[in-house]
Image 1 (tube, rainbow, N blue to C red):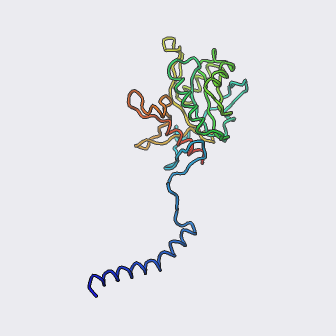
Image 2 (tube, rainbow, N blue to C red; image 1 turned 120 degrees about the horizontal axis):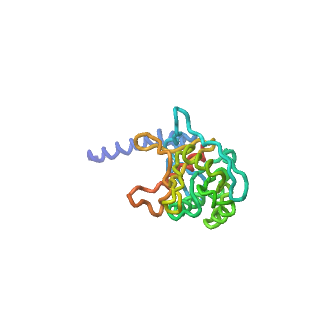
Image 3 (tube, rainbow, N blue to C red; image 1 turned 90 degrees about the vertical axis):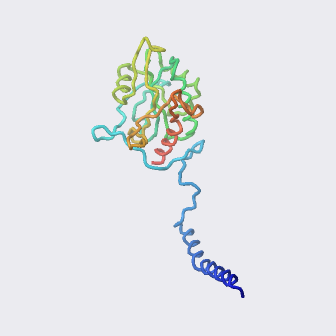
Length: 250
């Protein structure tokens, strides 16, 4: 027999021995769930769209060493019902400040929130909180028409109105989300275009940036379809959806 044939026989024997010894062990480990057979490392929340989660847990926003919680609030919603922060306990929710006659960023923010609403359709533990900064105009009836105009279906999406000073205090002090009446601004008001993300226990949560600092809020103006704003900054709606899904699994 030629030398090369001996080599082939040797290789065949090694493969045979490997199969006899190791393959049964591998099969046994799979049967005992020692080897994971998931196609992806990401875990998904059950939503109408597939939204990936994974990675590190979202950070808490800390002030003076304490995790920042949503301040207590109580306002009337579009159905004339009194809604407080307690109505959101046990729910993950997104929070914004807006007004119905806003001619600039509010329509874009509302459309993005409807997109988020539809992505988590049917989940009882997900909600949205929208506070008007123009309560003199935005009565429950006006807010109801606005909600219907944008196709709001989530029963936990409350459009709230009430005492102007209390709303502005909630925005500027409670969340540091800027809101102000300004006669020179388009529509007569100015406000932040960011969304806050709240967990089931009422804590403000977010992911961290490349330096380990909390991002705190999510840009609410640019849509997933648009991808980038006029300055080249990337949209954060996808990020927000991923982080909502992550909190829903906590």
